[in-house]
Amino acid sequence: MQRLAGELLNLANKAGLSTRPRQELKAILARVSSIAAFGVSLELRERQEGDEPYVALTKLLVELGSAAMAQGVMVVVHLDEVQNITDEAALSQILTALGDALATEITVTAPGGREILRHLPLAVYLTGLPEFEEMAHAQQGATFARRFLTNTLRPITDEDMQAALQGIVTEGWEVPDQRGGSDYVVLDPAARDAIIDLSKGEPFLFQLAGAYGWYAGDSDTITREDVLAGWSLVESEAVSHVCRILDRLPERERQFIEAMAQIDSGRRTLTAIAAAAGYATPQQSGAVPQRLDQIRGIISRGKPYAFRHRAVEAYLTTDWPRIEAD
Image (cartoon, rainbow, N blue to C red; front, side, top):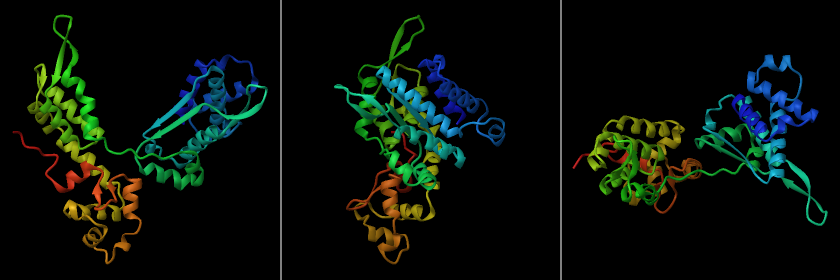
């Protein structure tokens, strides 16, 4: 909450709110300044009277939204890694403040003198691990579901990665040379394909494979051998990344995933997976497949079932992340 309060104050200064003479606005800024400086503690509550922290943040967001509307712009709030907000009280207050601000409507005058209600030009993005939605639902329930639309990102396709790397393959990447000018490093098509194959649609693994492939060689061409040499240094990190995904799963969900991995891809029906997991009937798997599909984004409940998370599938069914050089 300290960080959010501080950033909102910075934005308020840029919007010129701190120079406005309104007494109520000055009180809001003073309260949010206290939150930014000291956080939210029992000591702060006892020392200073005023709104609850979330109320003060909401009021400042409304003021910022009103100023943005007057200037024809938007306010965008982006909180990343939200699953790391482990303090339930802080998370509840943050979600309430953001949600209340999003729900706020103000009266404006439309052409013809008509008065209408408009939402403020506020956009809020909360990004992090899929389990954050469960945390938020547990604490905010229907309020969170009504005010925030959940979108679970799917793995990046190989075609997306090819498009992302196309420029460095065809045109190269500009780098400074030893003479005060610039030169270009190009990515060999075989190196591109190796990066894509190793990444399995995971942005983090894509970054690992690309970065260490870049630093592995010293010529003006990144080769497949460079990519494999760099990857050998981070295989354990790639394994840790996938293991963290699996370790976060409840026992029944991980059991289902591991049973699914034991079955050939063309035979992955719910009946076969349930049997491999030790269930007497498919119905005993309950909501596990649905959660792994809709909430976790790890599997796809098609006919047959398939892994959507290709890094998890590769880890459980192949020698990945080990890859042999040609």
